[in-house]
Length: 219
Image (tube, rainbow, N blue to C red; front, side, top):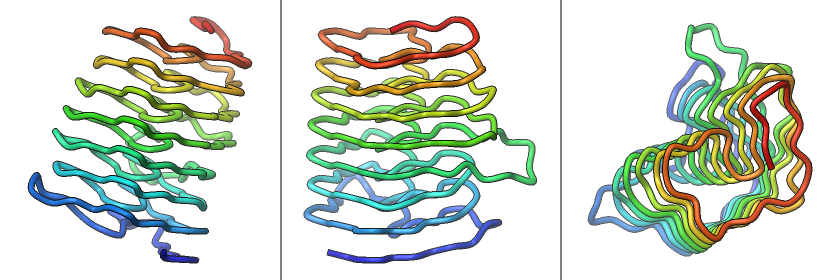
C-alpha cells in the first residue's frame, strides 16, 4: 500500500507511477490511498499506457489534468484491466493548448483494444470547464470490451458533450455493466446514463439515476 502520494506539475505530461506496461508485464495487488496527481495530459495513477495486465489495483484520491486522464490508466492498447477499483475526484485543468479536456474515465481515459472486466469506479467531476468523452469507467472506447463493471458517477460539467455513466463515446463492446446512483448534469449535449454516444454493442446493462442536458440526452 502506498499512502498520500503527491505529484504536481501543471505544465507537465505523463504524471503517473509507471509509464508504459508492456504486453509481457503485469502490475497487481497494489493499493494507493489518498493520492493527489496534478498534470496536463495523461495524468493518471498507475500507468500511462497498458499493453499488459493490471489486476487487483485500487486507488483513492484526486486527479487534475486535461486529456487522457484515468484513475488507473490513460490508454489501454490490447491489455487487460481486471478486479480494480477507484474512488476519485477529478478536476479539469485550464490548459494553455488547443486540446480540449477530454478522454476522461474513472478507470481509463481511452482504449484501442483490450478488456476491462470486474472493475468499479466512484468518480466525481464538478467543473465549469468544457470536457468531452467522459465516462464512469472509460472516456473513449474504440474497440475494447468492457464487461461486468459498475460505476457511480457524479458529473456536473458546464457546456460538455459525450458524457456517460459507463462510457462517454463507445465504439467497442459493453456487456453486463451498471451505472448506479447516476448524477449527470450539463448544459451540453450527448448525455446518457450508460453512454453519451454509441456506435456499437451494448447488452444486458443498466443505468439508474438522473441525466440532464441540453439535447440528445437519454437514460
